[in-house]
Image 1 (tube, rainbow, N blue to C red):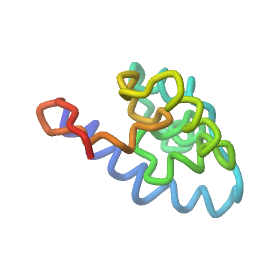
Image 2 (image 1 turned 180 degrees about the vertical axis):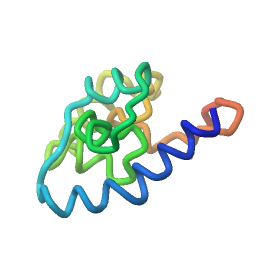
Image 3 (image 1 turned 60 degrees about the horizontal axis):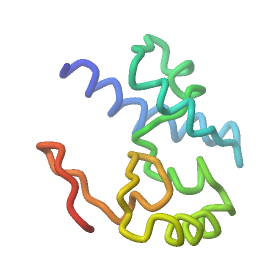
Length: 105
């Protein structure tokens, strides 16, 4: 498990910034992120193309200019913010604790 965490750390902080520089304005779609949790990728390039669920700029990468519009829609239909996902619209209102619990940000 520590190897997997180390790989995600390298992908997020070392490889992703370099690959983003090669593909300005590029992005990913959310289904790629969900599939990524169930698979282990040996190649950082494949992992990047599959989307990074630990992406620090996930709002821009996954939703771009649509994020604020989507957030308003989410607020209308999920005002309590019960529908959570690591890279879903509105998740930045929650903080994931080490034990997996979610707390309001």
